[in-house]
Length: 88
Image (cartoon, rainbow, N blue to C red; front, side, top):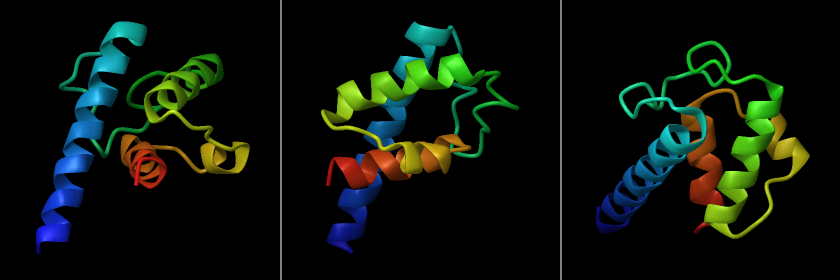
């Protein structure tokens, strides 16, 4: 239970970080940046925006997101999972 709570708190922190990135870099409000949101369809990120987002996430996580990992990211939740794995 303690481990699960710690993981949930970490994911919440990562969501707040993502919300801040989306607001600062793409002028997208935090209310729109929810786990179910699709990066392209719901948030309007084109391929160049997604590359920019990848660089920002890499800076925050202090690690590299591989092309294979990035190709599997379609939603904010997918991105949260990558961030969780990179910061574990």
